[in-house]
Length: 112
Length: 358
Image (cartoon, rainbow over all chains, first blue to last red; front, side):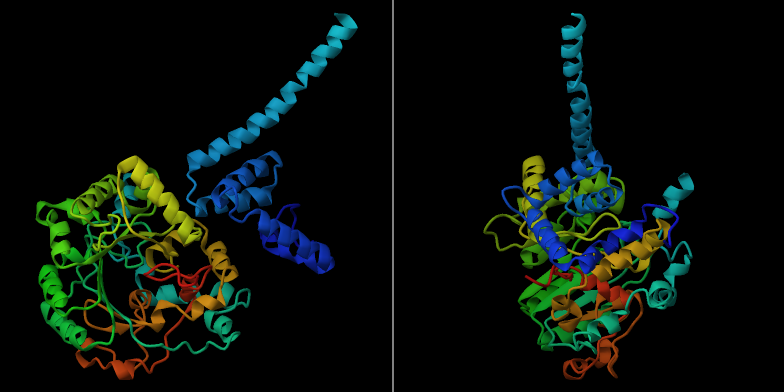
């Protein structure tokens, strides 16, 4: 390992190399990946914002790096980007909090 | 803070910045990652597809830079233009240009600057050049000049009278991003100028008075799909400001002059060069603008493009000045290249007329 860190920004450029150790699966993945981000029923700009929100909920540094840049390239403003991140954060916190109902159900059953 | 603000209002030349010297820029572009083999040089790259040396394919566009003086000091200006630049084309050089325009095989005449309108002989030159009847006569107007002073307020009418095609820069449809790159207050003045142009018929649907906008990114990233950006720009400018225009040209920022200075200062230089090289598209090389353009500087020297002009890389030909112009000899030259050329071959390619591939 040349780097002292688990994450190295330079590794993002090497993503394509994963194909070298499993050509068929790697190529299928990148073909699928490329297709997903093409203009479709959703615009590429909308997809970039979804990807940016998911990149944050997944806490993937490579994805945050890539989709912040991709969003800027597509003319997305920082206000739009932050709102997208909040959508991810709201779902994340909502997903935690909605489990509170489970806790309440359990309390009510055991000690209601 | 104040010092920083003042700095932003001055050209690199005025600040005596090291990068005001063309050779220093060329050194930066040839050393480091391009000297240690991390990235291939542009000549090595185009040689992979047997496109070295790059050769002209016939002259179509004469681009004349009538001076580096400008009322704006945009953060990314490749000309290093500004109010403190005094290089202005003389009437004598303009007369030499007119002789060339009368005899050229080019179908497009493209006037640029600085703010070309600030040249004291600008109107005379436009009147004379428009008499020649060249097919597409472009003036690259920064928009704010129209609102800068009363003496410029009639420019939309003047352009209309001479059937000039207007191309103007607009980095974004929001105030914040535009002002960050082009200076405080530029967005509002640009909107007013666009309304003035629309009012005389420029940019309206089916109008023959062409008004195109240039989008170049506001930071250290590449432009995305030109057609999608055009759609977004049209929607936003119409809905928010009732402004219309014809086409949007997406142009990549080339790593020279003030943009190079910005890349280095913001620690983005290497990443940006990697982005350009990663996005290299051999198909774009076939249509790069230096293959159909001659760029003429304020003092009459000839270059393969406006960027080479700013890097002081004159055409590689025995003809180097407008006074001795000979199209046949000029068409038989090798184009001068360096690593900044990657800016014109990234993605869908980039030129003063936008992307160069389908």
